[in-house]
Length: 303
Image 1 (cartoon, rainbow, N blue to C red):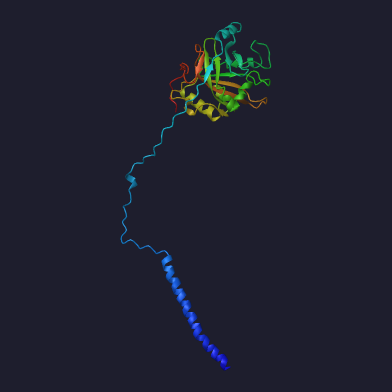
Image 2: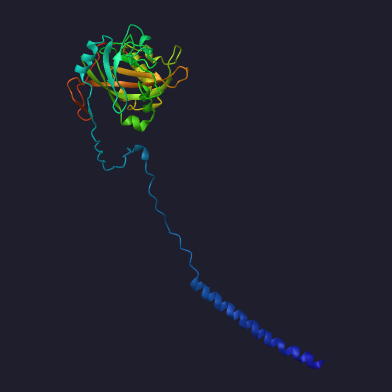
Protein backbone atom coordinates (compact mmCIF):
# COMPACT_ATOMS: atom_id res chain seq x y z
CA UNK A 1 0.00 0.00 0.00
CA UNK A 2 2.83 2.35 0.80
CA UNK A 3 4.44 1.81 -2.59
CA UNK A 4 1.24 2.71 -4.42
CA UNK A 5 0.90 5.92 -2.43
CA UNK A 6 4.50 6.96 -3.23
CA UNK A 7 3.77 6.30 -6.93
CA UNK A 8 0.72 8.63 -6.97
CA UNK A 9 2.67 11.41 -5.29
CA UNK A 10 5.33 11.19 -8.06
CA UNK A 11 2.71 11.63 -10.78
CA UNK A 12 1.47 14.95 -9.41
CA UNK A 13 4.61 16.95 -10.35
CA UNK A 14 4.66 15.30 -13.79
CA UNK A 15 1.04 16.26 -14.45
CA UNK A 16 1.76 19.83 -13.47
CA UNK A 17 4.67 20.00 -15.89
CA UNK A 18 2.48 18.68 -18.74
CA UNK A 19 -0.30 21.19 -17.93
CA UNK A 20 2.14 24.04 -17.93
CA UNK A 21 3.48 22.88 -21.29
CA UNK A 22 -0.04 22.76 -22.76
CA UNK A 23 -0.81 26.30 -21.58
CA UNK A 24 2.40 27.51 -23.16
CA UNK A 25 1.46 25.93 -26.52
CA UNK A 26 -1.96 27.64 -26.43
CA UNK A 27 -0.30 30.97 -25.69
CA UNK A 28 2.02 30.54 -28.69
CA UNK A 29 -0.91 29.61 -30.95
CA UNK A 30 -2.96 32.64 -29.91
CA UNK A 31 0.03 34.85 -30.47
CA UNK A 32 0.39 33.49 -34.02
CA UNK A 33 -3.31 34.09 -34.80
CA UNK A 34 -2.88 37.77 -34.01
CA UNK A 35 -0.64 38.02 -37.04
CA UNK A 36 -2.83 35.98 -39.39
CA UNK A 37 -6.36 37.24 -38.60
CA UNK A 38 -7.46 40.36 -40.57
CA UNK A 39 -7.65 43.49 -38.56
CA UNK A 40 -10.87 45.46 -38.38
CA UNK A 41 -10.40 48.71 -40.28
CA UNK A 42 -10.39 51.85 -38.28
CA UNK A 43 -13.32 54.21 -38.75
CA UNK A 44 -12.63 57.49 -40.46
CA UNK A 45 -12.53 60.37 -38.11
CA UNK A 46 -14.94 62.36 -40.29
CA UNK A 47 -17.23 61.35 -43.18
CA UNK A 48 -17.77 63.94 -45.93
CA UNK A 49 -21.01 63.52 -48.08
CA UNK A 50 -22.11 65.49 -51.13
CA UNK A 51 -25.65 66.94 -51.17
CA UNK A 52 -28.38 65.01 -53.07
CA UNK A 53 -28.67 65.97 -56.75
CA UNK A 54 -31.99 67.69 -57.51
CA UNK A 55 -33.07 65.80 -60.68
CA UNK A 56 -36.34 67.69 -60.96
CA UNK A 57 -34.59 70.68 -62.50
CA UNK A 58 -32.78 68.64 -65.14
CA UNK A 59 -34.08 68.01 -68.66
CA UNK A 60 -34.04 64.45 -69.87
CA UNK A 61 -31.60 63.96 -72.70
CA UNK A 62 -32.20 60.67 -74.52
CA UNK A 63 -29.14 58.66 -75.45
CA UNK A 64 -27.92 59.46 -78.93
CA UNK A 65 -27.99 56.69 -81.48
CA UNK A 66 -26.29 56.62 -84.77
CA UNK A 67 -28.94 57.06 -87.50
CA UNK A 68 -29.59 53.89 -89.42
CA UNK A 69 -29.59 54.04 -93.15
CA UNK A 70 -33.02 53.13 -94.51
CA UNK A 71 -32.96 50.09 -96.70
CA UNK A 72 -33.92 51.06 -100.21
CA UNK A 73 -37.05 49.23 -101.28
CA UNK A 74 -36.78 47.38 -104.54
CA UNK A 75 -38.95 48.97 -107.20
CA UNK A 76 -41.94 47.06 -108.55
CA UNK A 77 -42.99 47.65 -112.13
CA UNK A 78 -46.40 46.62 -113.44
CA UNK A 79 -46.88 46.40 -117.21
CA UNK A 80 -50.36 47.29 -118.45
CA UNK A 81 -51.93 44.71 -120.73
CA UNK A 82 -55.53 45.64 -121.59
CA UNK A 83 -55.83 47.07 -125.11
CA UNK A 84 -58.60 49.69 -125.12
CA UNK A 85 -58.98 49.40 -128.89
CA UNK A 86 -59.89 45.72 -128.48
CA UNK A 87 -62.41 46.63 -125.79
CA UNK A 88 -64.01 49.15 -128.17
CA UNK A 89 -64.10 46.56 -130.94
CA UNK A 90 -65.84 44.07 -128.66
CA UNK A 91 -68.33 46.71 -127.49
CA UNK A 92 -69.10 47.63 -131.09
CA UNK A 93 -70.77 44.23 -131.49
CA UNK A 94 -72.34 44.16 -128.03
CA UNK A 95 -73.58 47.41 -126.48
CA UNK A 96 -73.80 45.79 -123.03
CA UNK A 97 -70.01 45.59 -122.82
CA UNK A 98 -68.97 48.58 -120.71
CA UNK A 99 -65.39 47.59 -119.94
CA UNK A 100 -62.80 44.89 -119.36
CA UNK A 101 -61.14 43.51 -116.24
CA UNK A 102 -57.90 41.60 -115.87
CA UNK A 103 -55.92 40.15 -112.93
CA UNK A 104 -52.52 38.75 -113.96
CA UNK A 105 -51.80 35.03 -113.43
CA UNK A 106 -55.50 34.20 -113.16
CA UNK A 107 -58.30 33.35 -115.61
CA UNK A 108 -59.84 36.75 -114.81
CA UNK A 109 -59.58 38.42 -118.21
CA UNK A 110 -63.17 39.17 -119.15
CA UNK A 111 -65.48 41.72 -120.66
CA UNK A 112 -67.51 43.59 -118.04
CA UNK A 113 -71.22 43.52 -118.85
CA UNK A 114 -74.00 45.78 -117.56
CA UNK A 115 -77.76 45.68 -117.94
CA UNK A 116 -80.74 47.49 -116.50
CA UNK A 117 -80.84 45.12 -113.52
CA UNK A 118 -78.51 42.90 -111.51
CA UNK A 119 -80.25 39.64 -112.40
CA UNK A 120 -79.82 39.09 -116.12
CA UNK A 121 -76.10 38.27 -116.20
CA UNK A 122 -76.35 36.01 -113.19
CA UNK A 123 -77.81 33.39 -115.57
CA UNK A 124 -76.67 34.61 -119.00
CA UNK A 125 -73.23 34.77 -120.59
CA UNK A 126 -71.72 37.79 -122.32
CA UNK A 127 -73.48 36.96 -125.58
CA UNK A 128 -76.88 36.84 -123.85
CA UNK A 129 -77.32 33.08 -123.93
CA UNK A 130 -78.61 31.22 -120.89
CA UNK A 131 -75.63 30.02 -118.87
CA UNK A 132 -75.10 28.52 -115.43
CA UNK A 133 -71.74 30.36 -115.22
CA UNK A 134 -73.31 33.70 -116.11
CA UNK A 135 -70.99 36.62 -116.92
CA UNK A 136 -68.86 39.22 -115.20
CA UNK A 137 -71.04 42.28 -114.77
CA UNK A 138 -71.10 45.70 -113.13
CA UNK A 139 -73.81 46.76 -110.72
CA UNK A 140 -76.54 48.51 -112.70
CA UNK A 141 -76.24 51.57 -110.43
CA UNK A 142 -72.54 52.10 -111.17
CA UNK A 143 -70.66 54.10 -113.78
CA UNK A 144 -67.15 52.71 -114.31
CA UNK A 145 -65.93 56.21 -115.16
CA UNK A 146 -67.38 58.25 -112.34
CA UNK A 147 -68.79 56.24 -109.41
CA UNK A 148 -66.89 56.64 -106.18
CA UNK A 149 -67.29 52.90 -105.64
CA UNK A 150 -67.76 50.39 -108.47
CA UNK A 151 -69.12 46.92 -107.78
CA UNK A 152 -68.46 44.04 -110.18
CA UNK A 153 -69.95 40.57 -109.70
CA UNK A 154 -69.07 37.08 -110.93
CA UNK A 155 -69.76 33.47 -110.04
CA UNK A 156 -67.32 31.30 -108.08
CA UNK A 157 -67.02 28.43 -110.56
CA UNK A 158 -65.52 25.13 -109.45
CA UNK A 159 -63.48 24.88 -112.68
CA UNK A 160 -61.62 28.06 -111.74
CA UNK A 161 -63.35 30.34 -114.23
CA UNK A 162 -65.21 33.62 -113.71
CA UNK A 163 -64.37 35.12 -110.25
CA UNK A 164 -63.18 31.91 -108.57
CA UNK A 165 -59.58 33.26 -108.44
CA UNK A 166 -60.62 36.09 -106.11
CA UNK A 167 -60.34 33.53 -103.32
CA UNK A 168 -56.59 33.34 -104.03
CA UNK A 169 -56.29 36.59 -102.12
CA UNK A 170 -57.05 34.78 -98.88
CA UNK A 171 -53.41 33.70 -99.13
CA UNK A 172 -51.41 36.76 -98.05
CA UNK A 173 -48.20 35.71 -99.80
CA UNK A 174 -50.00 35.16 -103.09
CA UNK A 175 -51.89 38.39 -102.75
CA UNK A 176 -48.77 40.46 -102.02
CA UNK A 177 -47.40 39.29 -105.38
CA UNK A 178 -50.64 40.23 -107.17
CA UNK A 179 -51.64 43.55 -105.63
CA UNK A 180 -52.50 45.26 -108.92
CA UNK A 181 -55.34 44.76 -111.37
CA UNK A 182 -56.63 46.60 -114.42
CA UNK A 183 -60.11 47.84 -115.20
CA UNK A 184 -60.70 49.50 -118.57
CA UNK A 185 -63.70 51.34 -119.94
CA UNK A 186 -64.21 52.30 -123.57
CA UNK A 187 -62.20 55.47 -122.96
CA UNK A 188 -59.81 54.85 -120.08
CA UNK A 189 -57.60 52.19 -118.58
CA UNK A 190 -57.33 52.32 -114.80
CA UNK A 191 -54.91 50.65 -112.42
CA UNK A 192 -56.17 49.54 -108.99
CA UNK A 193 -54.29 48.37 -105.91
CA UNK A 194 -55.81 45.65 -103.71
CA UNK A 195 -56.61 46.67 -100.14
CA UNK A 196 -58.08 43.51 -98.66
CA UNK A 197 -59.87 40.22 -99.15
CA UNK A 198 -62.96 39.90 -96.94
CA UNK A 199 -65.32 37.00 -96.33
CA UNK A 200 -68.42 38.88 -95.34
CA UNK A 201 -72.20 38.52 -95.18
CA UNK A 202 -73.56 40.10 -98.35
CA UNK A 203 -77.32 40.25 -98.02
CA UNK A 204 -79.82 42.68 -96.56
CA UNK A 205 -79.34 43.20 -92.85
CA UNK A 206 -75.55 42.94 -92.92
CA UNK A 207 -73.68 45.15 -90.46
CA UNK A 208 -71.66 46.56 -93.38
CA UNK A 209 -73.71 46.88 -96.57
CA UNK A 210 -70.73 47.62 -98.82
CA UNK A 211 -72.89 47.27 -101.96
CA UNK A 212 -74.95 50.31 -100.99
CA UNK A 213 -71.98 52.70 -101.13
CA UNK A 214 -71.85 53.90 -104.73
CA UNK A 215 -71.55 57.69 -104.62
CA UNK A 216 -70.22 58.89 -101.30
CA UNK A 217 -69.40 62.05 -99.41
CA UNK A 218 -66.23 62.29 -97.36
CA UNK A 219 -67.76 60.88 -94.23
CA UNK A 220 -69.08 57.88 -96.19
CA UNK A 221 -65.62 57.21 -97.61
CA UNK A 222 -64.04 57.25 -94.16
CA UNK A 223 -66.71 54.92 -92.80
CA UNK A 224 -66.27 52.64 -95.81
CA UNK A 225 -62.49 52.38 -95.31
CA UNK A 226 -62.88 51.76 -91.60
CA UNK A 227 -65.44 49.01 -92.24
CA UNK A 228 -63.32 47.37 -94.92
CA UNK A 229 -60.32 47.22 -92.59
CA UNK A 230 -62.43 46.10 -89.62
CA UNK A 231 -63.94 43.17 -91.54
CA UNK A 232 -60.82 42.23 -93.52
CA UNK A 233 -59.77 38.62 -93.51
CA UNK A 234 -56.50 39.46 -95.26
CA UNK A 235 -55.34 43.08 -95.21
CA UNK A 236 -52.98 44.37 -97.91
CA UNK A 237 -53.23 48.10 -97.40
CA UNK A 238 -50.99 50.23 -95.25
CA UNK A 239 -52.38 51.28 -91.90
CA UNK A 240 -55.35 53.62 -91.83
CA UNK A 241 -53.27 56.34 -93.46
CA UNK A 242 -54.21 54.80 -96.82
CA UNK A 243 -57.01 57.34 -96.60
CA UNK A 244 -55.74 60.89 -96.75
CA UNK A 245 -57.51 63.83 -95.21
CA UNK A 246 -59.38 64.79 -98.36
CA UNK A 247 -61.30 61.54 -98.68
CA UNK A 248 -60.96 61.72 -102.47
CA UNK A 249 -60.77 58.07 -103.44
CA UNK A 250 -62.07 55.85 -106.19
CA UNK A 251 -62.86 52.36 -104.95
CA UNK A 252 -63.60 48.98 -106.49
CA UNK A 253 -65.28 45.85 -105.11
CA UNK A 254 -65.12 42.46 -106.83
CA UNK A 255 -67.65 40.05 -105.35
CA UNK A 256 -68.21 36.31 -105.66
CA UNK A 257 -69.81 33.60 -103.52
CA UNK A 258 -67.52 32.25 -100.82
CA UNK A 259 -68.77 28.67 -101.33
CA UNK A 260 -71.54 26.69 -102.94
CA UNK A 261 -73.73 27.02 -99.87
CA UNK A 262 -76.67 29.43 -99.86
CA UNK A 263 -75.51 31.09 -96.67
CA UNK A 264 -75.19 34.64 -97.94
CA UNK A 265 -71.45 34.73 -97.37
CA UNK A 266 -69.42 36.52 -100.02
CA UNK A 267 -65.73 36.69 -100.82
CA UNK A 268 -64.96 40.29 -101.74
CA UNK A 269 -61.83 41.95 -103.05
CA UNK A 270 -61.57 45.63 -102.11
CA UNK A 271 -59.24 47.87 -104.11
CA UNK A 272 -58.45 51.58 -104.52
CA UNK A 273 -57.59 53.48 -107.67
CA UNK A 274 -53.90 54.12 -108.29
CA UNK A 275 -54.41 56.23 -111.38
CA UNK A 276 -55.34 56.56 -115.04
CA UNK A 277 -52.92 54.50 -117.13
CA UNK A 278 -54.60 55.04 -120.49
CA UNK A 279 -51.42 56.36 -122.07
CA UNK A 280 -48.92 54.90 -119.61
CA UNK A 281 -47.57 51.45 -120.55
CA UNK A 282 -46.03 50.73 -117.14
CA UNK A 283 -46.53 51.65 -113.52
CA UNK A 284 -43.58 51.97 -111.16
CA UNK A 285 -44.05 52.00 -107.40
CA UNK A 286 -41.25 54.56 -107.22
CA UNK A 287 -42.27 56.76 -110.13
CA UNK A 288 -46.02 56.25 -109.84
CA UNK A 289 -48.79 57.27 -112.24
CA UNK A 290 -50.62 60.53 -112.82
CA UNK A 291 -53.11 60.80 -109.98
CA UNK A 292 -56.86 60.86 -110.24
CA UNK A 293 -59.09 63.09 -108.19
CA UNK A 294 -62.78 62.33 -108.08
CA UNK A 295 -65.04 65.24 -108.90
CA UNK A 296 -68.13 63.56 -107.49
CA UNK A 297 -67.30 63.82 -103.80
CA UNK A 298 -69.19 66.48 -101.90
CA UNK A 299 -67.37 68.64 -99.40
CA UNK A 300 -69.18 67.19 -96.40
CA UNK A 301 -67.00 67.19 -93.26
CA UNK A 302 -66.44 63.87 -91.49
CA UNK A 303 -67.88 63.76 -87.97
